[in-house]
Image 1 (cartoon, rainbow, N blue to C red):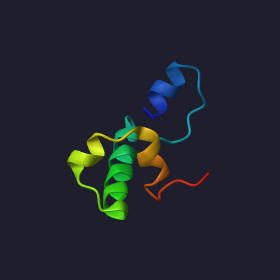
Image 2 (image 1 turned 135 degrees about the vertical axis):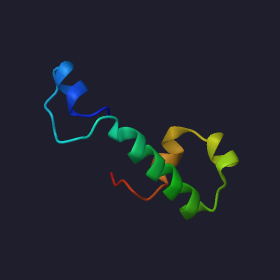
Image 3 (image 1 turned 30 degrees about the horizontal axis):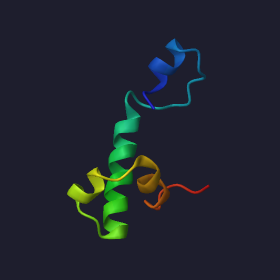
Image 4 (image 1 turned 120 degrees about the horizontal axis):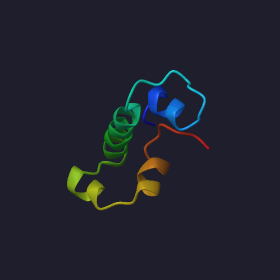
Length: 61
């Protein structure tokens, strides 16, 4: 999620995202995962992306 400017450059439809919005979303996902699962940053750093995103509570399938 690099934002609309880069999306347009790569041929994708803009959707209203600010530049580099993915960094803010990723930060919130990790913070939520750590709080929800009582995990510290050291342990979270060693986990895989799928585990964090699946258990952060911000996204539904």
